[in-house]
Image (cartoon, rainbow, N blue to C red; front, top):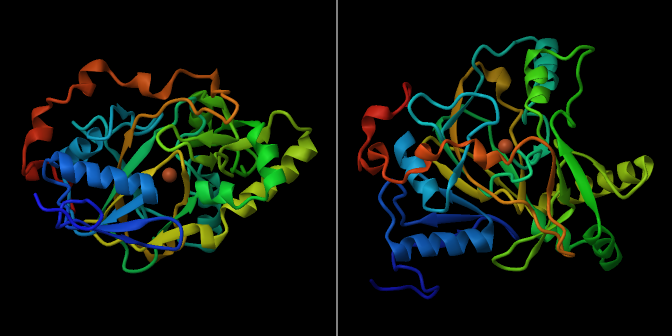
Length: 342
Ligand SMILES: [Fe+2]
Protein backbone atom coordinates (compact mmCIF):
# COMPACT_ATOMS: atom_id res chain seq x y z
CA UNK A 1 0.00 0.00 0.00
CA UNK A 2 1.39 3.40 -0.89
CA UNK A 3 1.66 6.08 1.77
CA UNK A 4 1.26 9.83 1.84
CA UNK A 5 3.55 12.35 3.52
CA UNK A 6 2.09 11.58 6.96
CA UNK A 7 2.84 7.88 6.64
CA UNK A 8 -0.84 7.08 6.25
CA UNK A 9 -2.33 4.91 3.52
CA UNK A 10 -2.38 7.13 0.44
CA UNK A 11 -6.13 7.60 0.23
CA UNK A 12 -6.58 8.81 3.83
CA UNK A 13 -6.63 12.56 4.34
CA UNK A 14 -6.68 14.12 7.81
CA UNK A 15 -7.58 17.83 7.89
CA UNK A 16 -7.58 19.80 11.15
CA UNK A 17 -11.01 21.24 11.93
CA UNK A 18 -9.91 24.04 14.27
CA UNK A 19 -6.83 25.59 15.79
CA UNK A 20 -6.34 22.99 18.52
CA UNK A 21 -8.72 20.07 18.33
CA UNK A 22 -10.71 17.98 15.89
CA UNK A 23 -10.03 16.77 12.36
CA UNK A 24 -11.99 15.64 9.36
CA UNK A 25 -10.91 12.27 8.00
CA UNK A 26 -11.58 11.43 4.36
CA UNK A 27 -10.84 8.33 2.38
CA UNK A 28 -11.96 5.82 5.02
CA UNK A 29 -15.08 3.67 4.85
CA UNK A 30 -15.79 2.89 8.49
CA UNK A 31 -18.39 0.27 7.61
CA UNK A 32 -15.68 -1.95 6.16
CA UNK A 33 -13.33 -4.01 8.26
CA UNK A 34 -10.44 -1.57 8.61
CA UNK A 35 -7.10 -3.05 7.60
CA UNK A 36 -4.21 -2.53 9.98
CA UNK A 37 -2.58 0.48 8.23
CA UNK A 38 -5.94 2.22 7.99
CA UNK A 39 -6.84 1.54 11.61
CA UNK A 40 -3.39 2.70 12.71
CA UNK A 41 -3.82 5.93 10.77
CA UNK A 42 -7.21 6.56 12.37
CA UNK A 43 -5.90 5.76 15.83
CA UNK A 44 -2.92 8.08 15.32
CA UNK A 45 -5.20 10.88 14.11
CA UNK A 46 -7.45 10.39 17.14
CA UNK A 47 -4.49 10.61 19.52
CA UNK A 48 -3.34 13.76 17.75
CA UNK A 49 -6.68 15.56 17.28
CA UNK A 50 -8.86 13.90 19.96
CA UNK A 51 -12.09 14.30 17.93
CA UNK A 52 -12.47 12.87 14.41
CA UNK A 53 -15.29 13.50 11.96
CA UNK A 54 -16.21 11.20 9.08
CA UNK A 55 -18.89 12.28 6.61
CA UNK A 56 -21.42 10.07 4.81
CA UNK A 57 -20.64 6.75 6.49
CA UNK A 58 -24.25 5.55 7.04
CA UNK A 59 -23.29 2.79 9.47
CA UNK A 60 -25.63 0.13 10.77
CA UNK A 61 -25.74 -0.73 14.47
CA UNK A 62 -23.57 -3.78 13.78
CA UNK A 63 -21.00 -1.79 11.80
CA UNK A 64 -20.83 0.90 14.48
CA UNK A 65 -20.33 -1.75 17.17
CA UNK A 66 -17.62 -3.51 15.15
CA UNK A 67 -15.86 -0.20 14.51
CA UNK A 68 -15.84 0.72 18.20
CA UNK A 69 -14.57 -2.72 19.15
CA UNK A 70 -11.44 -2.15 17.07
CA UNK A 71 -10.41 0.37 19.73
CA UNK A 72 -10.92 -1.95 22.71
CA UNK A 73 -13.52 -3.75 24.85
CA UNK A 74 -16.87 -2.01 24.91
CA UNK A 75 -18.73 -0.49 27.84
CA UNK A 76 -22.48 -0.41 28.46
CA UNK A 77 -24.02 2.32 26.32
CA UNK A 78 -25.91 3.83 29.27
CA UNK A 79 -25.92 3.28 33.05
CA UNK A 80 -29.66 2.58 33.31
CA UNK A 81 -31.42 3.02 29.97
CA UNK A 82 -31.82 -0.12 27.85
CA UNK A 83 -29.76 -0.52 24.67
CA UNK A 84 -31.16 -0.79 21.18
CA UNK A 85 -32.95 -4.14 20.66
CA UNK A 86 -30.47 -6.92 19.80
CA UNK A 87 -27.53 -4.51 19.99
CA UNK A 88 -26.33 -4.44 23.60
CA UNK A 89 -23.72 -1.73 23.04
CA UNK A 90 -25.82 0.75 21.06
CA UNK A 91 -27.63 3.62 22.79
CA UNK A 92 -30.31 5.58 20.98
CA UNK A 93 -30.39 9.32 21.56
CA UNK A 94 -33.52 10.92 20.21
CA UNK A 95 -34.55 14.51 20.71
CA UNK A 96 -37.44 16.51 19.38
CA UNK A 97 -39.91 13.64 19.81
CA UNK A 98 -42.91 14.78 21.79
CA UNK A 99 -41.01 17.83 22.91
CA UNK A 100 -43.09 20.34 24.86
CA UNK A 101 -43.75 23.37 22.73
CA UNK A 102 -44.35 26.35 24.99
CA UNK A 103 -41.22 28.16 26.15
CA UNK A 104 -42.11 27.40 29.77
CA UNK A 105 -42.54 23.69 29.04
CA UNK A 106 -39.27 23.60 27.13
CA UNK A 107 -37.45 25.35 29.93
CA UNK A 108 -38.79 22.96 32.53
CA UNK A 109 -38.11 19.90 30.40
CA UNK A 110 -34.54 21.02 29.87
CA UNK A 111 -33.73 21.57 33.50
CA UNK A 112 -35.55 18.47 34.64
CA UNK A 113 -33.31 16.37 32.42
CA UNK A 114 -30.98 14.55 34.82
CA UNK A 115 -28.62 13.34 32.17
CA UNK A 116 -26.49 15.33 29.89
CA UNK A 117 -28.56 17.78 27.93
CA UNK A 118 -27.88 20.73 30.15
CA UNK A 119 -24.28 21.60 30.11
CA UNK A 120 -20.76 20.71 29.25
CA UNK A 121 -19.75 17.22 30.25
CA UNK A 122 -17.65 14.20 29.47
CA UNK A 123 -19.65 10.99 29.37
CA UNK A 124 -20.35 9.04 32.60
CA UNK A 125 -17.58 10.60 34.69
CA UNK A 126 -19.58 9.63 37.79
CA UNK A 127 -18.12 6.17 37.16
CA UNK A 128 -14.65 5.27 38.41
CA UNK A 129 -13.81 4.14 34.87
CA UNK A 130 -15.64 6.42 32.43
CA UNK A 131 -15.64 5.36 28.76
CA UNK A 132 -12.35 6.08 27.04
CA UNK A 133 -13.82 6.70 23.58
CA UNK A 134 -17.23 7.53 22.20
CA UNK A 135 -18.43 6.65 18.71
CA UNK A 136 -21.52 8.65 17.77
CA UNK A 137 -23.37 8.52 14.48
CA UNK A 138 -26.14 10.71 13.12
CA UNK A 139 -29.08 8.85 11.64
CA UNK A 140 -31.49 11.75 11.25
CA UNK A 141 -30.73 15.42 11.76
CA UNK A 142 -32.81 18.56 12.05
CA UNK A 143 -33.06 21.07 9.24
CA UNK A 144 -30.97 23.49 11.27
CA UNK A 145 -29.25 23.61 14.64
CA UNK A 146 -28.20 20.52 16.55
CA UNK A 147 -24.44 21.10 16.38
CA UNK A 148 -22.22 19.44 19.00
CA UNK A 149 -19.24 21.31 20.43
CA UNK A 150 -16.15 19.77 22.01
CA UNK A 151 -13.58 21.34 24.33
CA UNK A 152 -9.98 20.19 24.28
CA UNK A 153 -9.04 19.45 27.88
CA UNK A 154 -5.36 19.01 27.03
CA UNK A 155 -5.09 22.50 25.57
CA UNK A 156 -7.13 23.83 28.49
CA UNK A 157 -4.60 22.36 30.92
CA UNK A 158 -1.59 23.51 28.94
CA UNK A 159 -2.92 27.08 28.73
CA UNK A 160 -3.34 27.51 32.44
CA UNK A 161 -0.56 29.56 34.01
CA UNK A 162 2.20 27.56 35.67
CA UNK A 163 1.09 28.26 39.29
CA UNK A 164 -2.43 27.11 38.48
CA UNK A 165 -1.14 23.98 36.76
CA UNK A 166 0.86 23.18 39.89
CA UNK A 167 -2.26 23.69 42.02
CA UNK A 168 -4.60 21.50 39.95
CA UNK A 169 -1.94 18.80 39.55
CA UNK A 170 -2.38 18.02 43.26
CA UNK A 171 -6.20 18.04 43.45
CA UNK A 172 -8.93 15.42 43.22
CA UNK A 173 -12.63 16.02 42.68
CA UNK A 174 -15.91 14.25 43.21
CA UNK A 175 -18.10 13.37 40.20
CA UNK A 176 -21.76 12.37 40.53
CA UNK A 177 -25.07 12.67 38.68
CA UNK A 178 -27.33 15.71 38.88
CA UNK A 179 -24.59 18.21 39.70
CA UNK A 180 -25.50 20.38 36.73
CA UNK A 181 -29.18 19.92 37.45
CA UNK A 182 -31.67 22.33 38.91
CA UNK A 183 -34.77 20.45 40.05
CA UNK A 184 -38.14 22.14 40.23
CA UNK A 185 -38.89 21.36 43.85
CA UNK A 186 -39.15 17.59 43.62
CA UNK A 187 -37.07 14.91 42.02
CA UNK A 188 -38.95 13.42 39.12
CA UNK A 189 -38.71 9.76 38.13
CA UNK A 190 -35.79 10.24 35.79
CA UNK A 191 -33.79 12.10 38.42
CA UNK A 192 -34.51 9.43 41.03
CA UNK A 193 -33.35 6.77 38.59
CA UNK A 194 -30.11 8.64 38.08
CA UNK A 195 -29.53 8.86 41.82
CA UNK A 196 -30.47 5.22 42.32
CA UNK A 197 -27.81 4.22 39.78
CA UNK A 198 -25.44 5.14 42.59
CA UNK A 199 -22.38 6.12 40.59
CA UNK A 200 -20.04 8.42 42.51
CA UNK A 201 -16.29 8.64 41.92
CA UNK A 202 -13.26 10.64 42.88
CA UNK A 203 -10.94 11.47 40.00
CA UNK A 204 -7.67 13.37 39.79
CA UNK A 205 -8.42 16.89 38.53
CA UNK A 206 -5.56 16.41 36.06
CA UNK A 207 -5.50 13.15 34.14
CA UNK A 208 -2.35 11.84 32.48
CA UNK A 209 -2.96 10.13 29.14
CA UNK A 210 -0.84 6.97 29.25
CA UNK A 211 -0.10 6.84 25.51
CA UNK A 212 1.39 10.32 25.30
CA UNK A 213 2.03 11.56 28.82
CA UNK A 214 -0.13 14.59 27.99
CA UNK A 215 -2.18 16.04 30.82
CA UNK A 216 -5.90 16.81 30.56
CA UNK A 217 -8.07 18.92 32.86
CA UNK A 218 -10.50 16.21 33.88
CA UNK A 219 -13.43 18.14 35.37
CA UNK A 220 -16.78 19.11 33.86
CA UNK A 221 -19.76 21.19 35.02
CA UNK A 222 -22.38 18.44 34.67
CA UNK A 223 -20.70 15.90 36.96
CA UNK A 224 -17.99 17.55 39.08
CA UNK A 225 -19.49 18.58 42.41
CA UNK A 226 -16.48 19.76 44.41
CA UNK A 227 -12.74 19.57 44.88
CA UNK A 228 -11.91 17.35 47.80
CA UNK A 229 -8.86 19.16 49.16
CA UNK A 230 -10.41 22.66 49.26
CA UNK A 231 -13.02 24.34 51.44
CA UNK A 232 -16.49 24.60 49.85
CA UNK A 233 -16.11 28.26 48.84
CA UNK A 234 -12.57 27.68 47.54
CA UNK A 235 -13.82 24.69 45.58
CA UNK A 236 -16.65 26.73 44.04
CA UNK A 237 -14.33 29.54 42.92
CA UNK A 238 -11.68 27.21 41.55
CA UNK A 239 -14.19 25.02 39.70
CA UNK A 240 -15.91 28.08 38.22
CA UNK A 241 -12.52 29.33 37.06
CA UNK A 242 -11.68 25.96 35.50
CA UNK A 243 -15.10 25.60 33.84
CA UNK A 244 -14.93 29.08 32.34
CA UNK A 245 -11.42 28.35 31.13
CA UNK A 246 -11.96 24.92 29.59
CA UNK A 247 -15.10 26.04 27.70
CA UNK A 248 -13.39 28.97 26.01
CA UNK A 249 -14.40 28.81 22.34
CA UNK A 250 -10.82 28.91 21.09
CA UNK A 251 -10.09 25.56 22.78
CA UNK A 252 -12.97 23.87 21.01
CA UNK A 253 -14.40 22.59 17.77
CA UNK A 254 -18.02 22.58 16.60
CA UNK A 255 -19.57 20.06 14.26
CA UNK A 256 -22.68 20.55 12.15
CA UNK A 257 -24.15 17.10 11.72
CA UNK A 258 -25.37 15.61 8.48
CA UNK A 259 -27.12 12.27 8.26
CA UNK A 260 -24.52 9.50 7.98
CA UNK A 261 -21.82 11.36 9.92
CA UNK A 262 -19.70 9.60 12.51
CA UNK A 263 -17.70 11.30 15.26
CA UNK A 264 -15.14 9.45 17.37
CA UNK A 265 -13.73 11.27 20.38
CA UNK A 266 -11.45 10.72 23.33
CA UNK A 267 -13.70 11.00 26.38
CA UNK A 268 -10.68 11.31 28.66
CA UNK A 269 -9.31 14.39 26.96
CA UNK A 270 -12.37 16.31 25.77
CA UNK A 271 -15.69 17.55 27.11
CA UNK A 272 -18.69 18.19 24.90
CA UNK A 273 -21.83 20.28 24.83
CA UNK A 274 -25.03 18.76 23.54
CA UNK A 275 -27.11 21.15 21.47
CA UNK A 276 -30.04 23.10 22.89
CA UNK A 277 -31.09 24.97 19.77
CA UNK A 278 -33.26 22.48 17.90
CA UNK A 279 -35.86 21.22 20.37
CA UNK A 280 -38.37 23.88 19.31
CA UNK A 281 -38.29 22.95 15.63
CA UNK A 282 -40.74 20.08 15.91
CA UNK A 283 -38.25 17.80 14.14
CA UNK A 284 -36.68 14.61 15.44
CA UNK A 285 -32.93 14.18 15.70
CA UNK A 286 -31.77 10.58 15.99
CA UNK A 287 -28.26 9.60 17.03
CA UNK A 288 -26.64 6.35 18.11
CA UNK A 289 -23.71 5.98 20.51
CA UNK A 290 -21.29 3.20 21.36
CA UNK A 291 -18.71 3.46 24.19
CA UNK A 292 -15.25 1.95 24.33
CA UNK A 293 -14.48 0.96 27.93
CA UNK A 294 -12.12 3.12 29.94
CA UNK A 295 -9.93 2.80 33.00
CA UNK A 296 -9.63 4.72 36.25
CA UNK A 297 -7.78 8.00 35.67
CA UNK A 298 -4.20 8.45 36.86
CA UNK A 299 -3.03 11.85 38.06
CA UNK A 300 0.43 13.43 37.75
CA UNK A 301 1.35 12.20 41.25
CA UNK A 302 0.17 8.66 40.47
CA UNK A 303 -3.09 8.93 42.35
CA UNK A 304 -5.89 7.02 40.66
CA UNK A 305 -9.66 7.35 40.55
CA UNK A 306 -11.64 5.75 43.34
CA UNK A 307 -15.27 4.62 43.43
CA UNK A 308 -17.25 6.03 46.34
CA UNK A 309 -20.35 4.23 45.14
CA UNK A 310 -21.03 1.80 42.33
CA UNK A 311 -19.11 -0.88 40.51
CA UNK A 312 -16.67 -0.34 37.67
CA UNK A 313 -18.78 0.74 34.73
CA UNK A 314 -17.41 -1.73 32.20
CA UNK A 315 -17.98 -4.74 34.45
CA UNK A 316 -21.70 -4.35 33.82
CA UNK A 317 -21.16 -5.99 30.43
CA UNK A 318 -21.98 -9.71 30.32
CA UNK A 319 -18.86 -11.58 29.10
CA UNK A 320 -20.74 -13.20 26.23
CA UNK A 321 -21.47 -9.74 24.83
CA UNK A 322 -17.76 -8.94 24.62
CA UNK A 323 -17.13 -11.77 22.17
CA UNK A 324 -15.75 -10.26 18.98
CA UNK A 325 -17.17 -13.00 16.79
CA UNK A 326 -20.76 -11.77 16.88
CA UNK A 327 -22.01 -12.77 13.41
CA UNK A 328 -24.11 -9.61 13.16
CA UNK A 329 -20.96 -7.50 13.40
CA UNK A 330 -19.24 -9.51 10.70
CA UNK A 331 -21.97 -8.94 8.14
CA UNK A 332 -20.53 -6.52 5.56
CA UNK A 333 -23.95 -5.09 4.79
CA UNK A 334 -26.19 -5.58 7.76
CA UNK A 335 -28.89 -3.43 6.24
CA UNK A 336 -31.60 -5.43 8.00
CA UNK A 337 -30.75 -3.82 11.30
CA UNK A 338 -30.94 -0.26 10.15
CA UNK A 339 -33.36 1.51 12.45
CA UNK A 340 -36.66 2.69 11.10
CA UNK A 341 -36.43 6.11 9.58
CA UNK A 342 -32.79 5.69 8.63
FE1 LIG B 1 -22.47 13.18 26.18
